[in-house]
Length: 404
Image (cartoon, rainbow, N blue to C red; front, side):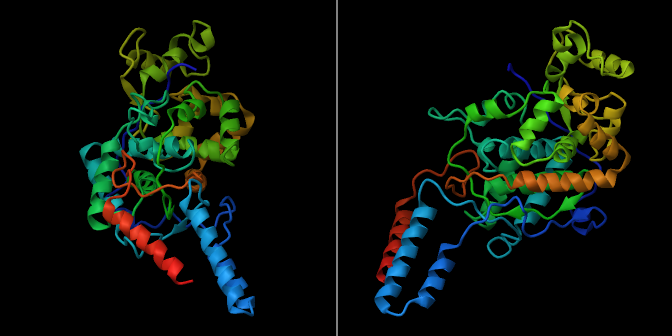
């Protein structure tokens, strides 16, 4: 497929962290349970129901012993049941978690406007590759090729330091409680709100993966050359509709991308030796100046006319044939179904905001079913427990057996 991908975003206008807390007009409240969540049976509840029906102590003990065995096999092995995500997950264990994330994102934006859009992009590159598990944050090791070096990410994904800053602040307040995967989801929401977009309640409770997969990232993540049909098929694999695809593509309302991702559109679209015909001539002239043939392909440009503001300008630009990436313009130029959604969102910003929130929530519920952990450092797995931690686990298991 070759090396590809768009660079990041910029970020601006939309108000302070304090303003976001008080904002009302575009705040969206998702339902507590989504139809896309996989249902999990509670083994403990099942055990208690059976226990109430038992007549003899021996039968009761057998039921409880079976329940413990099931809990240990489901919760402690290599594979674990998909976790139930919910709004307010850290209300008791780390009540300031969301405020810490929001305030840190606001400070990062004040230092570099582009950074928050770069953080938002991490959710896409994390959730599409084996679920939202923080794997995109992991550094490569001698035995593991990290996703940061994948074709769609290398020399492109950035602002990992912002996530590090958030994690450090949370570890000071609530050590070992808030997952890196949840940090990405919270920070992506705040990136949108800080730049003028909607605010919504996020479902939390994810675990962090123990490994990353560069191979899977290379296989899954689309090229900026992708057409609408390819993108529709990709998104459908995650139970995301055509409307979700178009709305989530609106994340390009903020941020920037590299010339590397568009030079083929300017000078050799589909191997024709000519520019993409689905491009406004005046806009193409501006891009020719930004990205001259043989020039520095790491130069970046805004992905819409207002790259610091989260709004529906992105869709207005597509209608005017001023999409930066091929994978953006194709949504208007190459497919009737995606074209309908693009036109709708170009005319109705509230409809875009609502659909974007729904899409982000659905994407955020993609989970890695394998047993994870709460990383202390988002860049590396925790490794084996310390002797003290091992003693605590052993004591807990012994106590459970004694109860029976």
